[in-house]
Amino acid sequence: MLAACSLNACAKDKSATPAPVADTAQAAVAPAGQGASPSTRAAKAVVNGTRTMQYVKEIIAYGPRYLGSPGHAKVEGYLRSRLKGDGLQEDAFTVDSPEGKFPGRNFIAKFPGKKDGIILIASHYDTNYPLRKTSFIGANDGAATSALLLELAQHLRAATAGGNKLDGYSVWLLWTDAEEAVQQWSNTDSLYGSRHIAEVWEKDGTLKHVKAFLLADMIGDADLDIQRDGNSTPWMEDLVMEAATRLGYQSHFFAQSFGGVQDDHLPFVTRGVPSADIIDMDYGYNDSFHHTTQDTIDKLSTHSLEISGDVIWEAVQLINERH
Ligand code: ZN
Image 1 (spheres, rainbow, N blue to C red):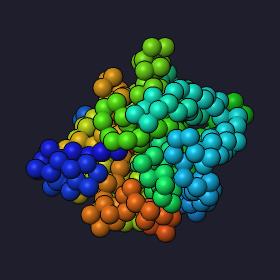
Image 2: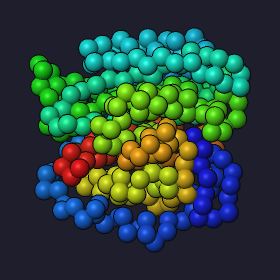
Image 3: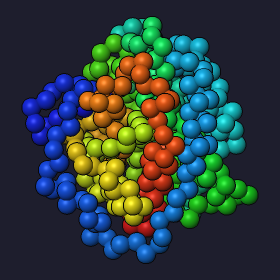
Image 4: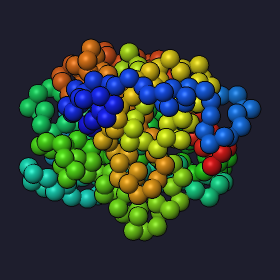
């Protein structure tokens, strides 16, 4: 992904320094969200960080997952086998990039709910193509959140066993492909998978049923500090902050904000889907591990995976209650 700062003068891409939080954003620390009354339901931790870390290990064991690589094909097979029976849909498409054409594939696991509507939770699983000649394996950038979605699948599978339906909206987990730029980040060289599926779902009418889009990116960082994103829908960001606060994790959220992160939520934001990019763009000192061979599993923690996953789970419950 790429970040632009609108609150100060920085205009660099991924190394952009977070801007201080504006007063309006700080107001989000108080549980709020469209004047909704506070939830009386107890927030519940569901994510097992140790098991999630095991999924991370399994993903990175395949090596780099850039487009066209053996590791990419292996991870496709891995997702397919892990999600057997989860109403798995595969969305194959062509990545038409400045470096040529590659096969791309999004994966969608569907868990039905009683309410009419869909909550999407997404993560990209590919690794950066320009770094293909290095040992870059994207432990945090792609693997951690792909693993987190597998862990959430475990809970959704249990909740829908025996033909049961979830109490709220259907939840669809989306593993996007080709989030990374193939050459240099631009509107046309980035977000290939999310742009493709958003367009498909717009055409076939699915998008009208999507109530919310929650994107997870780089949130396995042991030093977890998730920034507020100016490109996300404000009430969704408020709701994420409220979910974090209910779990006592608010110190990891929104001490800083970005004017606008370009990430897989954008094709949904531009089509009017309420969206939140839950992202930590401060990975290592001054984001120094991001898109480097230092993005390895020792920089992650089971606790951060639990914080991130539980906040996403709680955000889903709050959306079910209010929207
Ligand atoms: Zn990346």
